[in-house]
Amino acid sequence: MSRAVAVPLDDAIEAYLTFLRVERGLADATMRAYGNDLQGYGRYLERKRANWASGAQGAIDYLAALTRPPRVLKPSSHRRKAAAIRAFYRFCFAEGLIDKDIASLLDLPRAARQLPDTLDVAQVESLLEAPDAGTQLGLRDRALLELLYACGLRVSEALNLDLEDVALSEGSVRVIGKGDRERRLPVGDVALAALTKYVDEARPALLGVTKPGSGKSALKHGGPLFVSVRGGRLSRMAAWRVIRHAALVGGVRGRVTPHTLRHSFATHLLEGGADLRVVQELLGHA
Image (cartoon, rainbow, N blue to C red; front, side):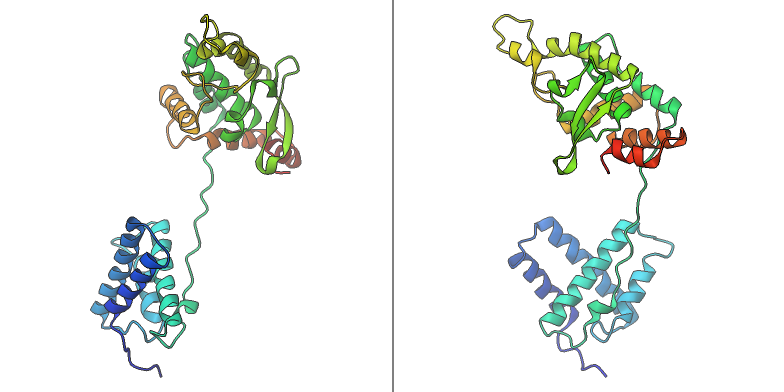
């Protein structure tokens, strides 16, 4: 049998939060989240008249209750609370506040694996055709979207491209992916046409190379491929806005992100009969 609880639960929680604040240096918002999770657990135990240090059953019952109606927690919230309780018990055992290693008896819920959304071909076409081709920014956005889909690029890979990485005459692009692995990818005719129009017409204007004394003429033949209205490299946040705006204008509902185009690229190739190994190489997974 376990010895009687020597430390009230509230005092143990306070000791743990002090440890997190002083030893771990956690932010105030994180501290509040831990505190709220543990206090909610304490209220449950009080209602059930359960001893917090006598074993793992109280925590197991509490976490199970969070998955039942009327208030079912999202999987991410459920996992966070479970992690907070297990970490708390690990601290208490290490500090001698309890005589049982309760943390070792608590399993974290499996993290739900969220599959990327996929667009069908018609949705992709609506997305790609959404930018206004009559404007410089529209030409840039169309080229970016076309390249993301045509090559299945990660958004970071596309934004890190320099002009010299694109061989318009050959219809290919040199990409540096994760782990600094280099791959050269073919660019389809439609995407190539969009890129050529952007590079020839919109990019010089965005760089301001037509203005006398602008000091940017050298960038016409080098520097970032995709540039902002100020002539700098397009940011990740700006690219996300481009895609969200194109989805809105194109009437594409649901969650659309840069990775949606990448996943759609792979899915459509596989549906068309492409070899899995080839698709993996194109994506930079090989």
